[in-house]
Length: 240
Length: 215
Image (tube, rainbow over all chains, first blue to last red; front, side, top):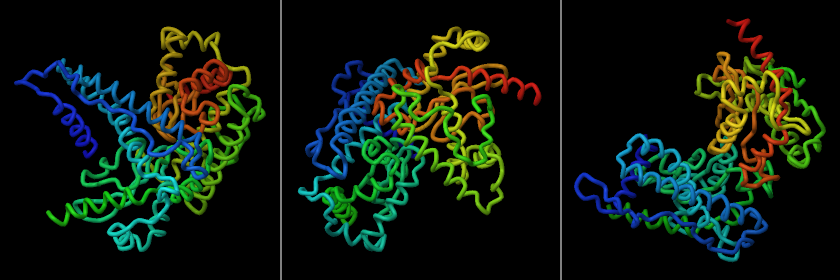
């Protein structure tokens, strides 16, 4: 159900970017914003030796770029289908949009979730996130153990997440399959940290040793990014 | 071994029917060392641990697969059981100097059910290329027809009611060392250089016998 909501939100968002006069779609949709590959906030070798330069190049320039390209292609097809009123085609495109759009969304977050050690990678989070982690998981180590266990247990491809449930006002650990964004597990979930456990995220360096990759990645996790988002949402929640 | 459709390994890690470097340069020795030596081995070892002391212990692999598939509501041992089966089937789907167009009855059936070998090639290729995330593409046989099927993660045609004849593993671990992100190149290499049509023919014969005896 939340998957459908996500798709509908995405489509409405796309549709809202142009003016639809009356009951007919404006065919001039050049103003629709397509996705583009964000730059990596650090050099390709900056996360060595935890994540190799080879992996970072492939992951960013090939995998993420392909999601962006295919997502834009699908959006283009969606635009035509909508202009034609071809509702069958609109529905049929949803899985391509979810997969490639999800891939883009997830990886855009992922690059920000990582930072070189000399830029704070691995440094534990500040409050209020730090206290929230202790309250929900006992300790930072407790959270890390849980995420590593769940990440290792993902069958096939997917992600393991630390999220904030804005409705229940608490932290959660979740996994998603393939390129499903965290929001597919609950519309109130905000991603704080996502760790890619697709094999392409670690294979050239770690081969089948996903557990070792998960153990090591914490020394380049950018807790500042997660803590800033958490703080922003905590303030919003408090003022509501 | 290549002739058997039923993998009756009973949780033994069988080696591929060729040396680990025999598929070079199309599939590297390094890939075989990890894919067979680590991934496949882990599925078998973990399956043994998982069924120990349960009523699945000692049961044939295909029994475990069907039971734990549980009509799509997967039980814990499904992943290891199905992947143990799938990988043995995969090694036997390939041979050194394989690939290309089959001949004889198999070619005739491909032409009957796909209109041409080229159309089959296209369809198999597309299935393998468009399986999101981890999974497999298959040539399968059911109701006297050949068809191409793609499945996610560990799912295989056995649980979907058809006889598997050929498979390609499209989990990233199957091709990442040799092809990185270039799955389409891997698929082409598999089709052009690795497919064992002898294995496919033998499996088809077994499938026909099995369907007629259960009819």
